[in-house]
Length: 171
Image (cartoon, rainbow, N blue to C red; front, side, top):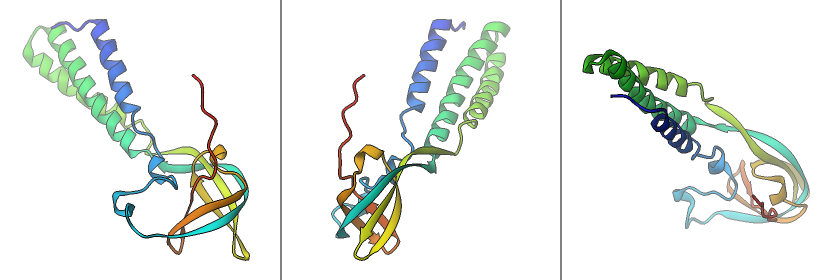
C-alpha cells in the first residue's frame, strides 16, 4: 500500500486541527462554572474595582498534550504501516512499521508542554474598607474600574465577573 503525499497532508491538517480544539484556561475563567456549581446558591457581593493590570496565568495544558499523543500515535501508526508495507512489500513489515510509527507519534505528542501561560488580569478591588487583589483568567478589556459582582464560593476563592465587553474582532 502506497500512501500519497496528498493523503498524508490531509491527515496532518486534520490531526493538528483536532489537537488545537482545547483552549487551555477556559475552565479557570471567573465566568465558567462546573456542573456542580450550576443552580447552586453562592454568596455574591458588589465590589469596587480600582485597577486592572494585564497578567499571565499558568494553567494545565494536559488535554492538548493527551490529544497530541493520541493523534500522533494514530498518524504515526498509519504512516509507519504504509511505509513499511510499501517499502518492504509485506504485511509483517507494515505491522512493525505501524508499531514503530505509533511509538514515534506518541513520543512527538509528549513534546507538548503540560502547562502553558494564558492571558489573565490582576484585579485590585475594594471590599468594605479593605483592598484586595485577585488574579483571574481573562482579557484586560473584560474588566474596567468601577462596580463588579464577585462570587465567593469559599473564603479564599474570588470570582470577579467581567464588567465590560471586549470590542468585536474582525478577521
